[in-house]
Image (cartoon, one colour):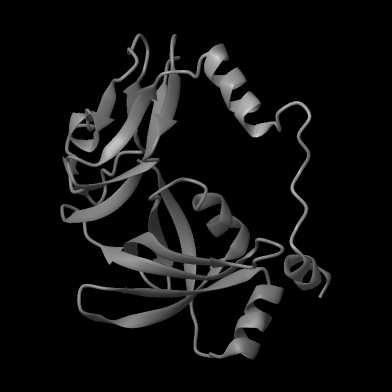
Length: 209
């Protein structure tokens, strides 16, 4: 998994005004918590943190004001511009197990039928410094009617499934036939010589209000 080193600074001022000032300096207010310790209020460089968060479950090695390992657990972004407003980091130790969601990536092509992917991420338990980047599932050559559940996934070494093993990951469904599509179209269209039914007087009055 990816490990990124980021320099952290202690933060001693709080509130919306202080947070706006921090962001104007191209930094991000951060809270580091976990292991029963008091939350630590930090400031991290915005650009470096933004790049790091592009990788799911990135392991961040903080240096400077603190020397710790952390995982991102909560990210707040500006709804319009997308910049980072605030980030929560979870303190982790080498060797400990953590529960995270890793992406499910489909590889290959379905020859017949339609792919219906119902799960894009799956919960697993893994060692904090060896979190897998994701899990792949191949649909190459799968027949119509095939179902793959979370329990069918071949997880990377060291990862244990936490999600419900019966949870559906994907289904290969039959593609609609031309006859079925034509039948649906014909059923929706009015018969020859028919016109759309005019609304009742009361309904027309309600529509006009």
